[in-house]
Amino acid sequence: MSDDGPMHAQREEAGRELPDSGTAGLSAANGAQDGVPITHHARRVSSFRNRRSTLSGGQQELWERRWPELGAEARDTTGRPLPRDLPQWFGRQAPVVLEIGCGTGISTLAMAIDEPHLDVVAVEVYRRGLAQLLGAIDRTAKTDHPVTNIRLIRGDGLDVLEHFFGTASLTGVRVFFPDPWPKARHHKRRLLQPETVALIADRLVPGGILHAATDHAGYAEQIVEVGDAEPLLQRVSADSRLPISVRRPETKYEGKGLEAGRDIAELVWARVE
Ligand SMILES: C[S@@+](CC[C@H](N)C(=O)[O-])C[C@H]1O[C@@H](n2cnc3c(N)ncnc32)[C@H](O)[C@@H]1O
Image (cartoon, rainbow, N blue to C red; front, top):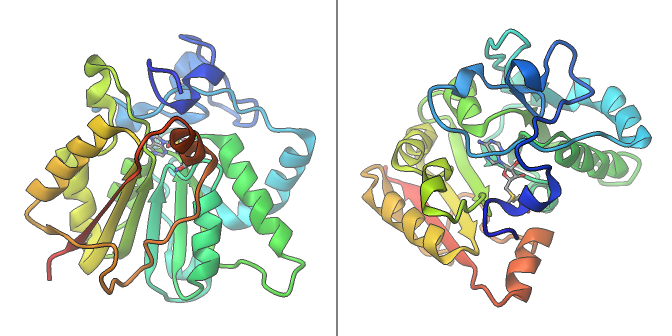
């Protein structure tokens, strides 16, 4: 990982706005980040960077085939929020877990398979990551155990929290390895800030879980401080009886942290009753 920013900093071209070939009407020139209009988060600094996200031919074909059913944009091209009716989208009424910044969706898929009674909404700004998750879901379609409890949203997870979900509507919120933004001048870009954690706490049902994991010691300290200071949250042990599982598979990103000898902080809070 670069020490100048999140894990993908090395893969992007520093300072360049990278247009998304697949999103009509949006361009970096008018302020899009990976095709996500920035009008809605102009009021706060974003926790993500521009990334090139050209899809391969196969991914593009898959996107056209499966995205209309399993995916949605957080905003339309004019910047209007596009909230979805979740029971209609999933075709059932079930407890909902939101994962913010799912990357390529390794944890998302494995955890959704482990908990088929939960509906999982995975939000990511990185289109190629979403395409990989879409591909993984699609590969289960012809098996005996097709995965049917994941939906994908492309956009800013905070925007989705604000506009897709009401107070006390989520059974869990997962934030695994949020970009650490290690430089002090970038700390304001970290996703888990007091306001964000307050918003998450508001969206959780009583007893609902906020589960965060990070391999960055400084960010872990900040998350602990912010989570413990939130009056609606109470820290709980990962071993206690919880409404959602906190067992995660190791992701590629996490593997790199472990290889580099970094400790993983697993942080879990429950919304007070
Ligand atoms: C370090 S990666 C970790 C990905 C994945 N959770 C994992 O453990 O492998 C962080 C991801 O969060 C995404 N991200 C950052 N801020 C976000 C936001 N506000 N909304 C949605 N995704 C965001 C980034 O695009 C990036 O893919």
